Amino acid sequence: DQQVKQNSPSLSVQEGRISILNCDYTNSMFDYFLWYKKYPAEGPTFLISISSIKDKNEDGRFTVFLNKSAKHLSLHIVPSQPGDSAVYFCAASAGRSDTGRRALTFGSGTRLQVQP
Amino acid sequence: DVKVTQSSRYLVKRTGEKVFLECVQDMDHENMFWYRQDPGLGLRLIYFSYDVKMKEKGDIPEGYSVSREKKERFSLILESASTNQTSMYLCASSAPRGVTEAFFGQGTRLTVV
Image (cartoon, rainbow over all chains, first blue to last red; front, side, top):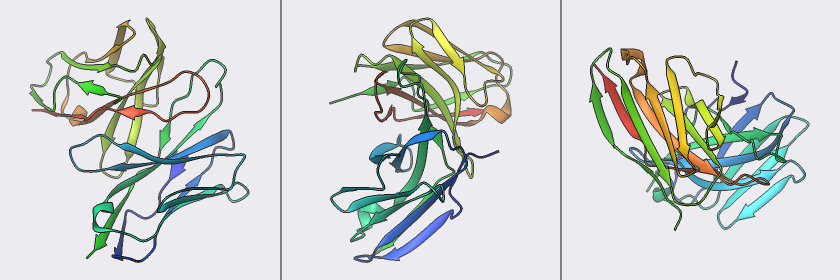
């Protein structure tokens, strides 16, 4: 029972165009969402996050949108660059920030390929 | 620069062996995690620890145990390795308060033959 779903295993876009990666979740207790980027044979690196009190967060070429009613978030990369080619994981966490007990639940990942 | 270091990049072990995966972080984080990554399944949480000697089971703890004797070190133990434990293992740590991201190590590719 996957609580965080990335339904597109792969995405290919042209350099300079927009990349849109999607993520859906089922657990309404999730209140913090993150995107990680992973290159082969390396650990994931944090990219951008959003709290459930917001619907958009922007950092340079990366923007994350959150639609709580649809339980959907997306990552937009504009413009896409060949160096963005990697696997992107959506992650979510819920509750107990008072005790610090927050573990991340990850999606299955989307492999993005940016063609030069 | 924050750092999570896993002791091995690649390991090959035999079925039935006891396997130790070590992870050290230098950020004074209370929370530490062990995940495994498999194709099509993403990262799945095995165990996490929110303090020294404290631990909680994640989604797939069967066949694994953990040890946290010091704040900076979190060990994953495969009591009797099996071929279905062949995977990429990822350690992470995070700060205890508020909502912050988890920092990951470089991963250990474990093959059980």
